[in-house]
Image 1: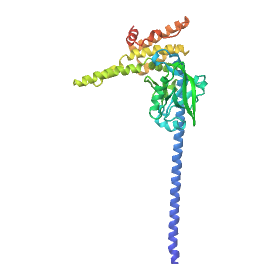
Image 2: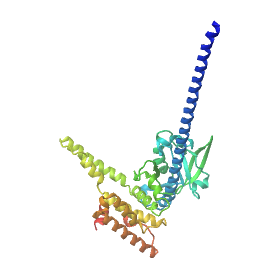
Image 3: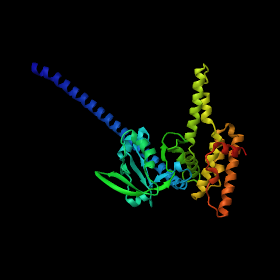
Length: 364
């Protein structure tokens, strides 16, 4: 009896402990399952978002490729080789999408994102997902330098009008391809996956907001935006703005040395110098690109009228805005006259790159 009295409480305690442990295990398993469900859902959402970015890339490139080809020769220093392929690295995408981007095979190396149908690259057998190894004997870097190389160096290594030696890795195999490069004003394109609805250029890359591309997709206005951005790179506006800003910053430093705090005023003024003339020049070149590439261009002013009004207080245009829109309409009339007369649609009169002359035209 004494033994039984001792065993019963022990057994009860074991049963209770087992029950509690079982409850804890069940709750832990439920928490793990919920965590895995959330992670899987987040991964699915990121993959779907990356698919949207890829679709926007495709839409932008479909519009930009013929425009870039038409811009070949507009400025010799901005005309490079283009084989009909788009190169990217993981750095072209948001950090939040790195895992999904790597799962697609894009990492810290330069890979082929797209090969256009009918292009020299397609004819030579280049495929999406191929990793670039060398271009005309120049080894392609990996790691942090690969993004800059993809955006700036590749196009300068490709010789327009000539056969180029391209080495790529496909799986474990190294392929040597000979591909002709066509003259083109080629620039990298990055889709900004943030909430930005802006467009930005730096002389080597065109950044387009995802929301902006999606909003303009399937409309005649996406070419308007792309042609405008491309024109800014072709005419080297970002480089000229940077130079003007640098000269202004020198004045700020000189003033500071004399005990005067300008608050960066001269640098800001330098960066903004000729901004109005640059906008007009971009419009002029964009309209010629659109017309020569076969895009509709006669409603270009209406698009920019809406954009400019959205940026102005109470939607009221300033005098310089009216002037800019009037210049667009004047150029459209000139292009239409050339087309009717069977003349070549080429902006010879606007390719001098002299900002002072352009400002005189803008004022006249």
